[in-house]
Figure 1 (tube, rainbow, N blue to C red):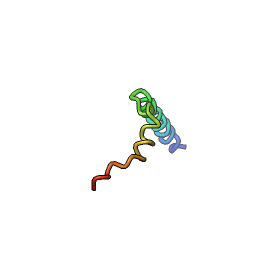
Figure 2: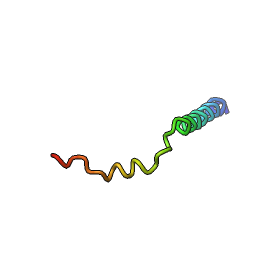
Figure 3: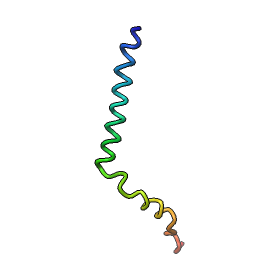
Figure 4: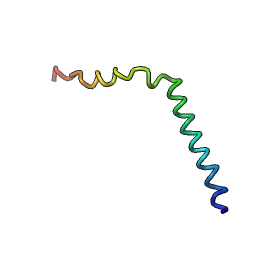
Length: 49
């Protein structure tokens, strides 16, 4: 029973940290350009080599 007193706050704090990281990534614009990276992979930049 003493383990629950330790693990419950740890689990809640990790969950809140994950939620905070996700909200920060939304606010900083990480998901604004979803198609740009997919199209950049297809470009061939090393034609001159």
